[in-house]
Image (cartoon, rainbow, N blue to C red; front, side):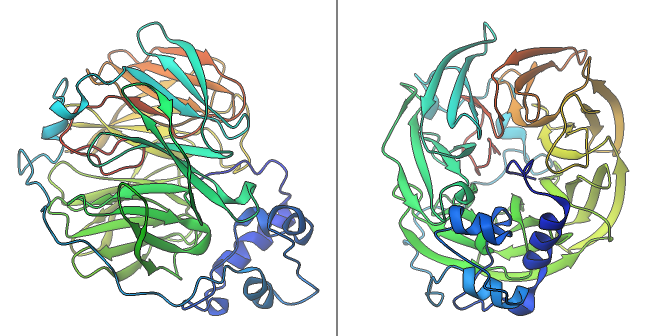
Length: 435
């Protein structure tokens, strides 16, 4: 889940979801759905460049307010000079990102926690040794995630288009200096991943229901895959051999499987009704994908190759983010503490520790006084789990030995933070999906 929606009432939200779900109204060659923040005509007038409903049907509204992007173009990919690196251990895709296993590529980079804040528009910088905020960066107007590049040389700040009238940016941070470079204008940069072979960045254009393949350095468009039946396309993880990725459809209670060899939408999987899939993470052996579900309060288990739902694990209220331990045996699940998509302060937030081999819940860590743990990552030594407290204006650092927590006030709405540098040979994106 994403974006602040405290100002969206129930009826507006219902319209937003109805619009996002009306696939019959989507012309995949030209028109894509509007962001949920623009579901109200008055908001569209101010936030989306004067889009108005004019009393028409939802289908007409989608067409009227959609982004005219032209027909899909053939993929213009560079020659395959790289292949997906083989796993260090075929039985553990995380074996190359164990404690302290730094690539030479991160030598000289600053040890920092970078936390984007949607309300303040800043990127807060924390010293992980002192647990104190030491800087506040201007990057892009609506920062959502801090995303390590495939080659580990750049931290990209991705943003939310709905706060800029239909525009978004990505901005690079130099991890050696902590300085922000020149932003690059893109249509929608809500989330960002990288293909396992490093040839492309995958810009998750959630509001437009498409995956944009871009040059991983310049962000020049290489082509895109339309996903018209995946409203709220958002988080992803990848098969061990890099042949496919599975993306969650937050507003569609479904998953999209993307063929990364032929660059096509390979299929859709409708999950058991009543859910809202969030983050997704592959098991160490690559056979199962764990899908956090905000409304089901747990993890949906999906067999990746056969692409079918095979199980469920109850964790906590509002399951959202997923982070593997440094040895790849455990999965830390951030439970947001509420089903309210606008968020609540001091909710029933917690972290569940899941044994990925059983799989079963080993422990649950609560937050004194309540909270809203959201997104983040693990420290390089595996001793701390850093998470944004999205609706409480704080950053959490959980001790992975006993679950005790330190709280760092930052105000506003912190979201997709990352801890850097991370162990690993390369990054698949998001807040640090490392291999």
